[in-house]
Length: 98
Length: 90
Image 1 (cartoon, rainbow over the protein chains, first blue to last red):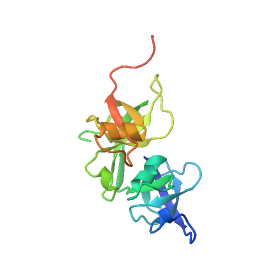
Image 2 (image 1 turned 90 degrees about the vertical axis):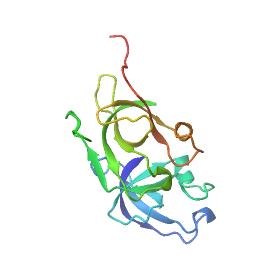
Image 3 (image 1 turned 135 degrees about the horizontal axis):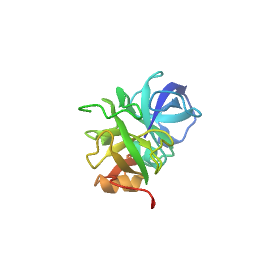
Image 4 (image 1 turned 90 degrees about the horizontal axis):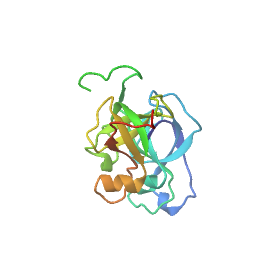
């Protein structure tokens, strides 16, 4: 799974039936610090995320498996909202009690 | 599979139900000489790994399903070992 930030929504009136009822969000992949990495992608939202929120997503077959009915063509799905990413700076000793 | 170092964890209250109760760790892929390579990813822990540990990471759905003893689902990246030693002859 990877980090991203939601930057918008995508509305499709005509879409494959398997996407019915699911929201599509536009998101920008980021690194663990929140810095944008690469091109924006469209993902199926499974956690009611909102624009501006930090999320994490899964790609590939596992994205389709994340939907209640796995028989769908999704290649990216948002599967969590980041409350906090606790990261030890590279080279520093691991935080006590972490 | 890839070798990486555990550099932290993610706290997420709202997440996919298949992730409920799972420890989500941040893993930085590393080269055999210990340098960072590529981007930090989020992996489900299956071996009680902790911060600073060098770990073996599988990034494939069937691997994850087998390790977590469940049907294939949405989990793809999973920590499958703690590395004691690695690299070629020195």
